[in-house]
Image (tube, rainbow, N blue to C red; front, side, top):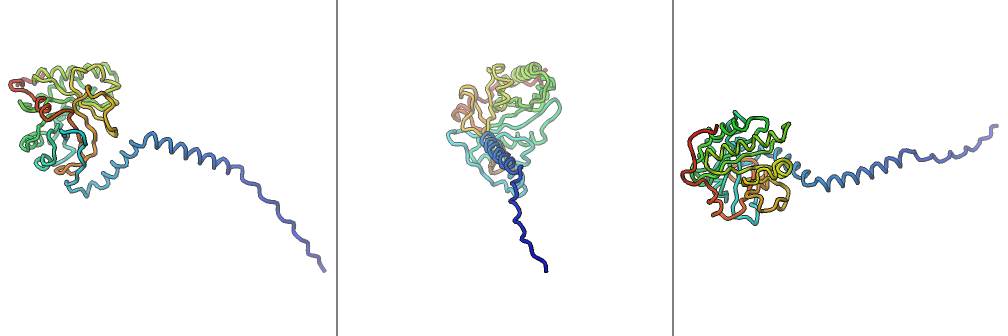
Length: 279
């Protein structure tokens, strides 16, 4: 006859030493994520909106509409071939008073839709202007020559615009010198002072204090007002992801700082434009 022996209860298992470490890591990760989101929430929201816009782009109708920015009386857009076919008459029926149209880039590129946009905007009664996208590694005179050979500015048009925001360059002094050459030659050709366009961070870092005699068109998104004083800029590009009936997809929205009469006064006067290309 055998005697059954009682088993002793197993001692309780000690907690794994890595569990407290994981809890602390999780807490730190949560705190870091909240800090990151708090600091970059505007940019994150912006990327999320742009991703959504790309996702639904195939289902857009060209009738979508973003409310105009309150507090300003004069609204405008800027466009390039990226916007595709534009119904300018429909655009004009939605309180768009002015449009800047991409004409050229660098030393050889002409926007493929410039001429048709240029003519159609004018026919629709929208005050038009043209801009050149500046490539900082190319000669300023050659870029000015391309623009003046392409753009037939006439009295009543808005001044020419130089878009300076491309950050891939090696020497800021060379970049500024080429910008100055473009502005000088284009002003001499058309007889009117060009407008300088840039975004807030690029302008503050590379251009501020060097081109103050030129009117500034400032791109500054996700803010209630530009951080530059109002006397520093005349046009504010407040969004690059807006919708207007007549354009299928997003477009840049701008406001002019001033009255409609002030916008008209900005136009090229009679007998100001020459016919010779910049040299």
